[in-house]
Amino acid sequence: MVRWTAPSISSATPTGSSVTWRGWIAPHSRDGLVRDAVERCLERVCEAAFRLEERAQTLMPDQPWAKTGGMGNRLRHASDRISEDVIWNAVRHDLPGLVADAQRALDQLRAERGGAG
Image (tube, rainbow, N blue to C red; front, side, top):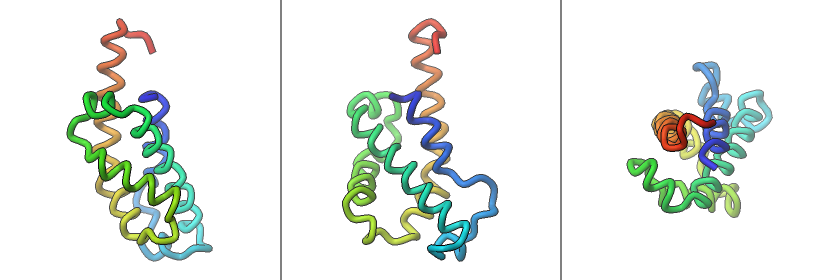
């Protein structure tokens, strides 16, 4: 599950600085399409966190798992009530730390299994 989560996290992070706030909030722009794709990737990350439960908390204790679960619920059931800036801030400020923690968790799991991928 952790192996599956890392690509979703990376996919949820728009590369570079080409995605602008103005484009992010414009529903029919290229960046609006990126936003839709990012939201879907965030749903997968939140679902993986839910499935991992205590294992995620053990492997990545510094992550705000309660907030992650709450965001997942809102993305699935109330996406029309999530402010664009909430998603924007999560992608720009929260995901980089989650990517780093997920990579460390993968490295730890591989080491525990003797280097098997």
